[in-house]
Length: 192
Image (cartoon, rainbow, N blue to C red; front, side, top):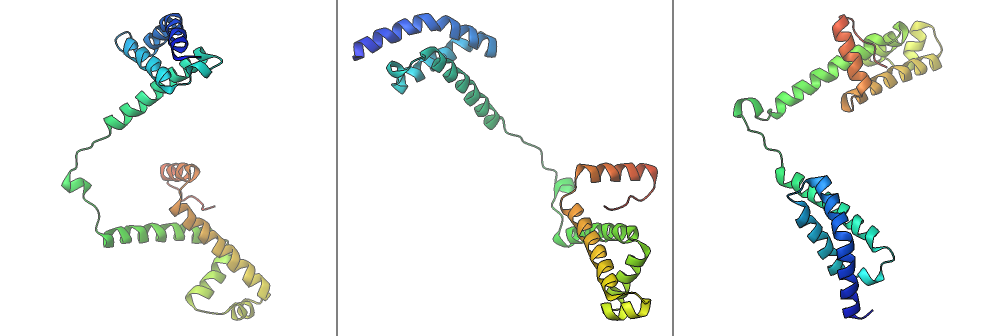
């Protein structure tokens, strides 16, 4: 198409589609902004230079209209932003030592729950190894059980401790729900 033919075709297309596009924008954003948005969509279509290459220009026009609304919504979100007043007494950052003490207390609490949830024999073997520095062989001889049993109990204990620490680093909804439930009932919850 020559530029004059494209211009004539675009004018006919504008007359045919303007009413439909205006109704679409009135429905989406209201009557005040609809004419400006409709004009913007037609300008984008004309500036793109693809009008004469389109098989279904009305579909392309509606896609441009939806994209314009999406861009507009994103721009509003960016412009609004969130601002909160800063209060020195309440919002001041914790000194690192205090944060470390809080994390340490959380870790101790979680480890204690995990430790208390261990079976008696596993707990005893874990304590013998960690507190009295006994080797697995010494523990096996003292308790009269096979060496592999000691290894098995230590693996169970360490796996339980790892799971407990993972719950600190990435608490799940179920862990939070269990904690809330146990705090209401007054009973300690078992660590998975």
